[in-house]
Amino acid sequence: MRILFISLGFIFVGIGVVGIFVPILPTTPFLLLASFFFAKGSKKFHDWFISTKLYKKHLESFVNSRAMTLKSKLSILLPVSAMLIITFIFVNNLHARIVLIILFIAKYLYFFTQIKTIKDEKEINELQKTDNN
Image: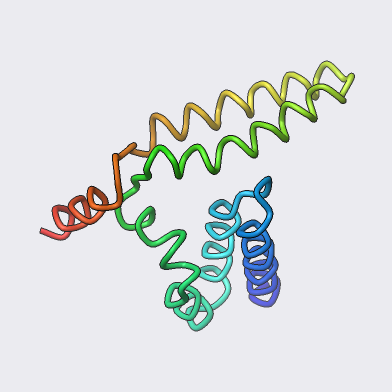
């Protein structure tokens, strides 16, 4: 099972890296999944992953403060929304369309009710300082 988790971790790191260069593919959700699978699979690989520049640039502030800038939120939400809308247009199954609508609504509800929206990265640093005290 450990090998499966570690393998999935690397697969999601790979997809996340591709997402850096392909605007329609979001990076952050895949890196979050990679972090989850590395944590389940191996402390060594998880420690390695959280020490990488990739993790520090794309996830560290979110993991530490549960906050994102509006720009960061939209850079995740808009490409995924576009894919859901395209899928909705081409799918003729009523049940599939209902699931797509629920996913669409749920992701916006989650991002705007569970993740604090901040103005800039400085605010993240301030949140982290207050959480540590």
